[in-house]
Length: 134
Image (cartoon, rainbow, N blue to C red; front, top):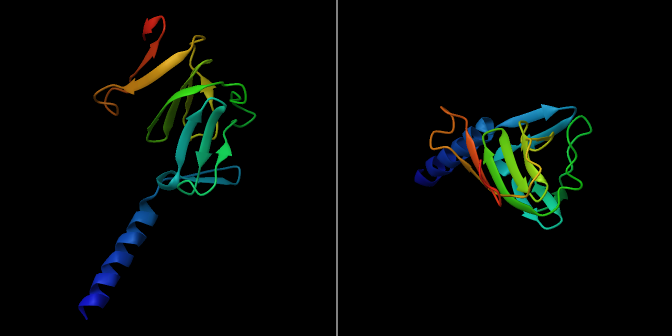
């Protein structure tokens, strides 16, 4: 009886976690944010939607900025649905967890991105470049 109760509790917890996973559904594609990993490499940005089982290069949708020539990715900061990426070609952000991208006005190599202390109350990020902190 104890084993059944324990198994039922684990299944209920797994169901709650699955139900609370954030989904993005746009134009037929789905991103389960609780299963998604990003990796930055010298050849660009990569994403796995199954905890590293399979990786695909992230280039973005046609209606956004392409990441095909992003160069060396130096930093990745996912904060909720927003994902910031620093690269040798600048700073990029996606508001749909990596499906569509836009460039954020820096045309210099960006080495790091850090959130403010209270990211959700004050949505500010700091970026480090060779020219200083922005």
